[in-house]
Length: 215
Ligand code: GRF
Image: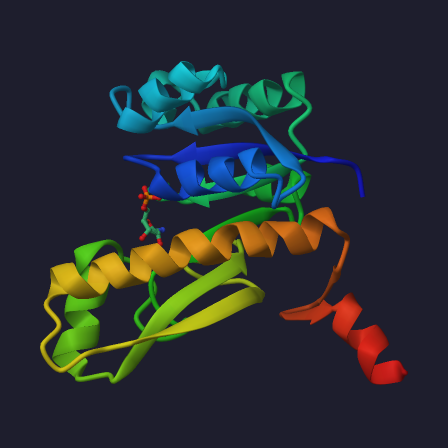
């Protein structure tokens, strides 16, 4: 596996992108961020990326008459920077087939709940935590998964639970889950960077653990 050269797609503040960047700076993760792409022209993450010296691009399907042209432009932007892995960090758009075909099993997303619960269309941001609290779930968490053509769907790479406290509000729960996301996303990327992962259909197998079991 070559060095992970990551393209981050984000629509907002991109705290997950920043956390991944920190893990690279601290040499916990062997990777680099080669470009940050946002569909939102004034997304704070674009300014942040520019400040870090990371190329920052506003690319939206609204800028193109045809969807094909949008995908062509996205792909050429990624290719120009030798991006071999895509990380979604609060990206509010569905990823198109041309990207998924070019980056098969190389597009990762993070979701602020334990999928397949509390996921799918419309389940983002505060809505997720609101639904968790309304349901009365006692545990929620974080899911890192490979992206396929459905919302919040694809092989699960890592999950971590977060306990729901009786006095939690959407805000307190959202904060604890986001803190957990920042600890988990780079660890999922580390598995790819170290080539410790195999994907068999919907299942992800950790090759380091497979060896342990075989011994
Ligand atoms: C996170 O909660 C993530 O799970 C979801 O979108 C949010 C993005 O947050 N996909 P940030 O922009 O990375 O701060």
